[in-house]
Amino acid sequence: MADALLAWIEAAKVKTDACLAKVEKYKKSPSAEGTSQKKEFSLTKCVQIIEGMEGIDDDVYMKAAEKFMDSDWREIFVNMSTLRKRAWLDRL
Image (tube, rainbow, N blue to C red; front, side, top):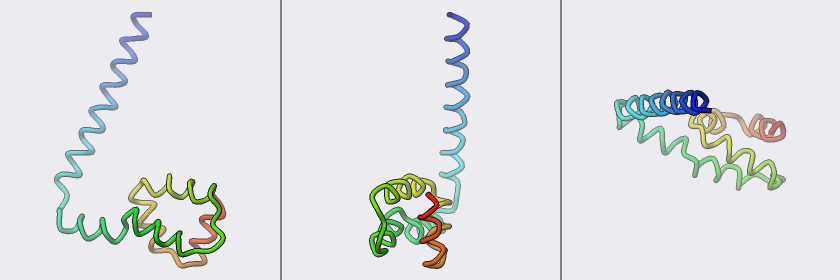
């Protein structure tokens, strides 16, 4: 049992270190570029787009909201054509 706990603690430390490295990388990115990109591909922007679309049921809406937690998914979604947005949502 003790070995399992030690292994679990070690895995948690590795995950923590990876998260901290990600935070440091984010902090070092150019703030001006990050700020403008943040607004252009924000969660708010994605939600506004979905709210403007007809026929989006609650299940699809919630699945899309989960995807939008990732900035890459938000950027992809905002840059898609309306037809592709609809197709992407239909496949969630």
